[in-house]
Image 1 (spheres, one colour):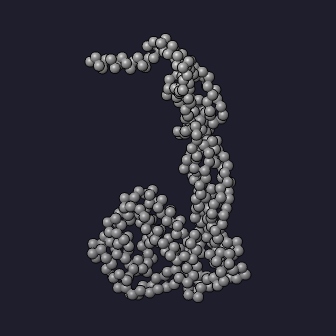
Image 2: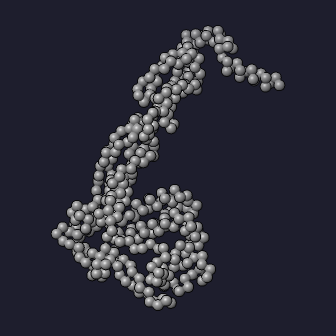
Image 3: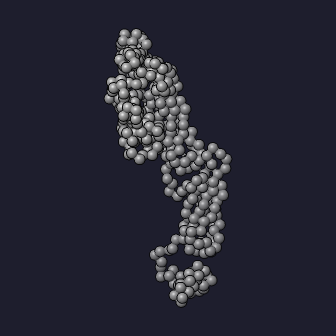
Length: 373
């Protein structure tokens, strides 16, 4: 039902459940009985797979392991229902003892919290580092203003359900080895509400809720990272029967930068130097999040050397202080030399000694030792 493999992790199961539940949610499929049935199946599947004990029984016995009508694992009656498949043992316990831990029927008229809504926002590297404000637009479900959430057309009223007489529950009887058992279940006519709509609201078609587009300005704090979530309370789907609204979850995407790379709250970048700059030393301009900065490269700087600009990194999230910026040096070898340039380089090379190339001298000393041994 969730589309996951047997060895799926808890995170994979949770992700699959959220996708399926969103797909078949009654709020997104008003009046669709098939989607409503699928939504119930998805919830039942997640209830089993998210419970370690139930999941183990399901892996061992299949659906029978979690279906009370089968009683899988029972040895007293060969793993079946000793009173026959048409009798629900839960009904017997509910009748005599008031239930044994099962979920009671939900009061359809009780206030209920609305579901959460998810949306994503994309920001630049600099906006993530320094913080910003972004307007996001998303779809949510709100109480219909035309009927105030009742589902009835303006000027009309809800009628008492003729099947359950307004109780929202209907009584059924079953014959069992203990006698006749009477149970209650939600009324199919009014879906447990006790009221029915004779003339549905034209704006929401009797659902009492309507999908709409909504915009909100989100404050993105300085130092936020890729895939972090901002929670905006009360901006999700409207609640039921006067219940509170759900929340809005904003997933943050940060665009990659052409120069900078983030590691924690530190910023890294590379800066190319000419051979002369690296050999002689030079004051160079380094890009930072705060603009241009000057740095004096010392003489004899080597490829791969790293220098640090303290406090030039990213703001610590919800805290004071900033990370640092690290700059890695690369040496660019000149190309397309003229004859005159080549001549000058040859003259320069002829003046160099082993003391000018310590790494090179050390390397060839090791080579000589290897071949000598």
